[in-house]
Every structure is written in structure tokens, then in C-alpha cells.
Image (cartoon, rainbow, N blue to C red; front, side, top):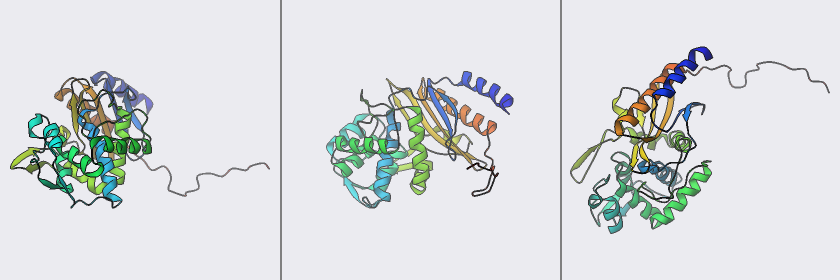
Length: 281
């Protein structure tokens, strides 16, 4: 088996252009491929996954209702809304928006305004919310990440690793399966503006059903994705790509290679006796 798999791995390593990447089997947590997976990099918008992990926990544990409405502050509007020129859900200044709509605005078009509004609604401001993000990161066992805003906009102290992002992705799928379904929705309409889901993997016939992309000049083009084929789910993270096309191709190659090269097999049933040993004394 090793002789069959290793040549394919060597070829895949040559084909992956991004400086940092990881491919993980969801069910077992087995790392199938990694490349500088513990090297820190600026996350860009994929930092929203940490924000969403905090928000999903607030909802699941009953501290936040999807029907709660949060007001759009001037800060959220200017920093992440239409005037910012970045990814936005086009939330109107001083309007009130339900949490359920803000979640879709944060996930599907990766709206910076949506994430800021949620952060302010939960913690009063982004600084307070970033404390929750770092507490949650510690709880999840992340060792290479530091979060300082909810949306992933440029901050010299905001860093993450491919391995940490894969851990966040695994946590969201496993612990919030119903909320995870939002990531696969194809488009989002708000303020009479329809925006398509920014995840390029969704249209590649890979079985992809989630997560998002990010970009910062200092961090490059990033992507977190997940796909399912034949009841096997894989999670892929790409950090530091040189272009949108490169990060999408890197992710596609890794997923195709992973599904082609590995399969899950049940070796023993839970509780099954696999052998007996005689012990002296």
C-alpha cells in the first residue's frame, strides 16, 4: 500500500503551489497531506470561521436567538459595509437585521459588515468579541492562532495556521451540523443585491458543501473547504496562494488526490474482542 500511495504523494507535493496547506480526514482526524501546516499567516476573511464558531456556540447554548435583531452601527457600515469597498452584505446604516440574515450575510458573500454587526451585538464592540474568539480558540486547542477582529481585515497581530483552520472547520461540522448547512447555500439577496457564494469548490463537482475564501495582500489567497464522496469527508486548507485560480486549483488537486488515494475501512466493531493475552501476576 505504501508503495502505491507514496509516489502519488510526491507528485502532489510538487503540484501544490501554495506555501501552506493541509488535507485532513474528518472522521478520524488523520492528516493525509501537510505542507508547512504550522507556519503562521494572515488569515483574511477565513478568520470569520473563528467568529462563526463563537456565534454558533452562543446560539446552540441558548444565549442568542436567530430571530434577535441587531442594529447596523456607523462603524460597521463604514468599516465593512458599502463605503468600505470590500466584501459586504450591503447592510443599510441604522437598520435592524435578524441574526439569521446576518449569518447568511457573513457566510455566503463573506460580508465584513455582517460579522462586525454580530460582534457588536454580542459583545458591544470588536475588541470584546475578539476576547471571546481567543477564548474559544484556546478551548479548541489551537496553538498557532491569534484573533484581533471578527472579520479578517488587516491587523499585524492576527495570525493563524493551516492546521488550526482545519481544526476549526472540523469543530463546526461536527458540533453545529444544522448551521453548517448555510455554507452550501448558492446565493444571498439583500438590499436588492444578489451575491453568489464565494467558495469556488461548490461548482467543481467534488461533493464540496462548505466554508469560504479569504485574501489579504500580506497573507495571499486563502481557502478552507470540505467535500464528501462515498461517505468520506475531507477538509482542505490552502494559505498564501498567489491568485484566486491558484488557491482553487491547489484545493481541487488535494481533494481529488485524497479521495483517490485513501478510503476508510472498519477494522473492528466497537467492543469487539480482537485478542486475548495471558498476564503473569
